Image (cartoon, rainbow over all chains, first blue to last red; front, side, top):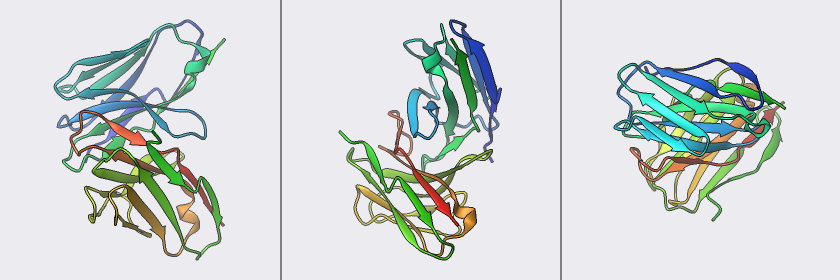
Length: 112
Length: 114
């Protein structure tokens, strides 16, 4: 059974710092991996999707990498801002039905 | 372009009452999903559909039923609500099961069962 773990569970950094969020998964037979952002009381916003054949994806200050063989992904946020404060969720898709298996998230707080 | 719309956004039910949550998408997606999100548990799949007229069970299906009579709508029903079903419910859709385009989520329904 696929399990997704995110470390750390919470992270507090000063504004301007570069940071890395970690995601690991137990079954490397995934089709894609997706990073989401969730603001308190809100829905999920897709940030980046990495297909299993890709190694990384970039969007603005965000860079996500994928190492399928080791079952790991990282989300790199450059020059963090208070507006980046949110919970970041990692999810993998492996089956033909396409359902996502989620980690429990990393709650990020960026202090001004 | 609305994306995925969930109604209602909030609801309080008494134990034993029934209700239906509606999910509507306007992206012509084949696949639709219902998840619940609980503190400390993350998001867990309740039911999903791979096309109009089809439904299947996910990880936590007990106490819920679903229907997909129209491609754009996916309904989640609670026949007899229990306090354990207090949660935030999210609907999602995707073009296919092995999509390269990702998944779109609704804004959620916050349900409290008292």
